[in-house]
Every structure is written in structure tokens, then in C-alpha cells.
Image: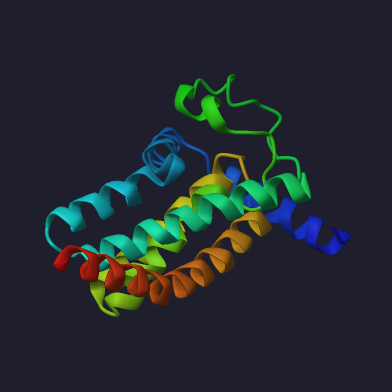
Amino acid sequence: MPPFIQNMDFYISQALRSAQNPLLDFCASVLTDITYGGILWWILAIVLWKKKQKLLALEIMLALVFSIIEISVLKHLFHRERPTILTLHQMFKPLQTLTADRYSFPSGHTLSAFAAAGVVRIRYPDAKGNLALLIALSIGIARIYEGMHWPTDVIAGIVLGLFTAWMSIPLASKVYAKLENVSKT
């Protein structure tokens, strides 16, 4: 990593962490916990499916599956260490200790959040879509605030997540059309 990027990462991380207080700690922790493994977005997809918005649900699900693959490959390809010296075990986050690793690039929470929120924003270019992106951005900021990611990890998660959303929509449409044809026969 070029030194100027490392310096920028460090400066932004320190600035966010210097704002620490109990309320922000609580909010960041809740955001992290409810979005681990994309759970918030999986729940949204299930609710949409049950409300007969099956194509949108499938688009979100496909984006989440692709994000999981990207996260797994990229984290082990780059091997970038997290900024915090605390392990997840020391932070008492039992759900995260099951599958988390020590690598930070890209931010998995951010990538999956922007993959799902990106789909919502593409489908709803209004307040709903903007709210989804705002939630996703809050997740990325929370990950930096908690010391689990560098800002460039989060930026990479945003870019990859939005690209994943954009790629998932046409593929999901094809899958959905095939599912509809199968159900008619």
C-alpha cells in the first residue's frame, strides 16, 4: 500500500475513533451485529419475497451471494491486517467469532450492504433507495469507527458492492424468468 494511502487511512481512522462516546459505541455495535453476514439484507429479501416482490428479493439474494464469494476470495488474496489490535473474541462478539477472520480488505459488512442497498436504489431511485444507501454508508462508517476496517477497506466495499448490485440485476432477471417458466409447466 502506498504510504500516502496508509497515512490517509490512519488519519481518517483516528479522526473517527477520537469521536468515541457510549452512544456512538452502542450504535456502531448494533449496526455491526445486525448486518453481520448480510443478515439485515437477507431478512429484507425474505420479507420482499413473502410480499410477492419476488424479483427484487431474488436480485438482493443474488447480490448477497456474489458479495459473500467476493469477500471470501479478496480477503484471502490481499491478507490486509485489521487496524485494531483487539480480536473479535476480546470484543465479545460471539456471532462474529464463528466465521470472521483477521483480514480487513475489503470490508465485508460494507460490500454486502452496498450490494443489497445498491439493488434497492436501482429499483427505487427515490427516498426508499436513498435510505437503503444511507444505511449502507452508516454500516461502513461504523466499521471504521469500531476500528475493524481502514477507510480504503470501506471504499473498496462500496465500489465492489455497487458493481455487484449492477451485475446482479440482469442475471436475477434471467433466473426469475426461468423460475416463472418452470412454475407454469
